[in-house]
Image (cartoon, rainbow, N blue to C red; front, top):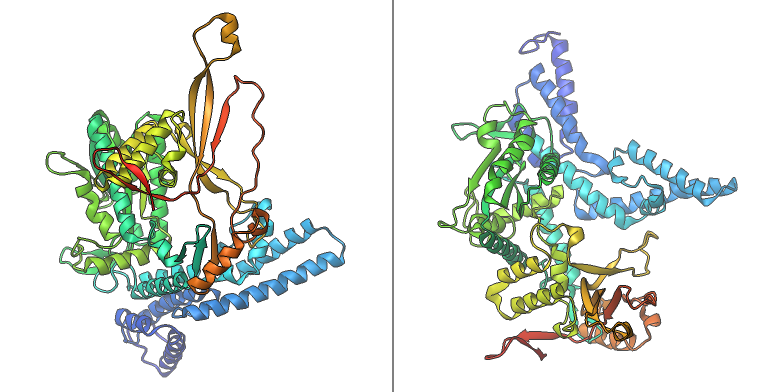
Length: 625
């Protein structure tokens, strides 16, 4: 047998035919789109070189069958496999527990042995990345998850999507001209998930203690799950930062950074052809996102050590082959722009293959925004819209319709679990959203000034739709400004334990119930009369204001039946209803006896929902619905 272009003896031809038959048998298990793409790329010519390339390609395809799922497995098949795996793990871990009980060992020994066996089973099946709980306090919940079909359903969906998409990138199905940003299969899975979620939300009726009934789809449409509301809120916060930057005389700069060539599966030649990148190291888009995040963490730490303050937004979006790149809109003091450029070049460029061709020109770009020519919102609005719903964009860089392109971007972000938008600096948005639930009548005149300022800003935002950005500016200033660290924020969330357990026996996460602000008040007492002192004392005051949150009861029947059931349930005592709805029965510790000690005042919620309307000739007021 020779290793030439063609095998010319009978034995060599027979061996090659047998090898080709084996490979074709393996390839036949995979989707038709994969088979056609492989034949197109590797060719049909029977040579030993092609045979070697076929072996490498098929070995990559076999990786797509992790968890015993075919690459073209439907969601029903994933759910069935999840049930099978949960039953198998339950049986195996149950046998381990029975052996431990027979030897009269304690429950801690059983948990440690079950965790060890579960890790061994996952490693044997190539799914060790599913196990994420190595701390002893999480051991019981981790073992419980191994026997839960719902956990395996989520794990298999994520594992299957990532593995299949990685193979799609390897065989060239994710690039310009085929499947820009994400493969067609990923987009199909994303649309199917949207349909499933919409059906689930429409099938559940939620009734609150005010006897208002909505479907979960109607409630979701009122929050940031609505793509239009999400886009408006992001642009509102960006415009608010821009107002602050103009007031303080700061500069705005757009920084665009991308990954090194080893993260790119495809490259575009000068003639416009898209070809395989020979420098690619089989890295996924998630690897690229983690690489950028690591560089950004080091850059932020260096800037913080230097005392540099910046604020703005970070937008992550895919290139045509799925590799992520970032657009950062940063506001900085004018004299620190050179320092900003130095930090970015040091941590994003100099430490990662700075000498490769094109690195200096394309890996990192800076663009100062001229306030006389345009606003910061005008620079980033196309990136925000393209990554959410494609509103007002038209076509993207590759000639795709922006609405269709936004669907592919969402599929890309879901598959690789990439956070598309992130605020840099400034106050937390969680407190901003919680302040919307605080009733203005529940904030007395004696409340700390930052809390009163924030409430006034929220009232203006609700009554005058055109000044939301000004409201974000006032809220930021009430929190102490853009340079205030999170620990020094003047308004924070109040979180209380629910006292409930998850399905895995773990404590449920604390739930926000309102906001808290710190202040100082002046007071007089009998000591002033004794000393004949006219200067009052000062003491710290903590004002806690509960937000207007309703209690909800979930059901799957009609609205009329749900209202009838809720009328009975909400008439029970809190103890009787606490198993179905979130009721907090915790009592606070008594106040310290000293009148000079810090005082905590708790403003309980009014249990009144009102809407804001601006009456002519008077300040914005409240009217009962």
